Length: 230
Image (cartoon, rainbow, N blue to C red):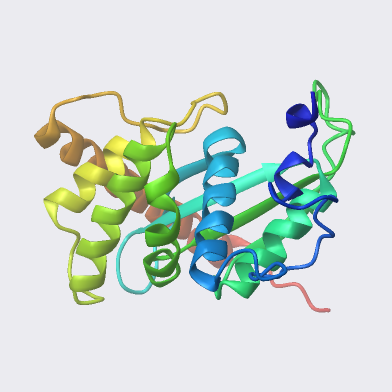
């Protein structure tokens, strides 16, 4: 059946021929601009539901705090036409994003034989524009979408250098729990909201201790190693 083709999402339901890969929000006058935007948003939401992720990344310590929480939504696919359509459509919609292609065929145990395109929309300001477009259409990841929206609303109202609120930590802890732990990276396991926030605080503090230890080791190495002249 046609609906199982990798590039099925590129086909307009009223078009007699497959979508040509260009971004055009008005197709032959069949739909007005707002309808086409909603149609594109529904397609993107389907990609997120099936081949995407929604999370809050923890980045290493910065000048402001020990570590930063960065909300992000990503999509991945091996279909180049589909990734190119998504890239162009997000650009047309005014959503800043990152696109990178990965070749995983050479990795031991990898089942992916084709280059994999990954598109990521991350950061509070970018998601402020992106989430309202896609959340009405999310199904499998509707909970993650609502949690990210709440987090973005809280983060945008908080002064930049202010500490994270308990609710922000709870959301970060909870939404990370939806993601797999195949790589051995930390993720929360509790379901109690207070404990969830505590786990995130402990995790951020552990990053600080690791960073401090690394810095101390580096300083000691610089003091004891002989100077090298280049």
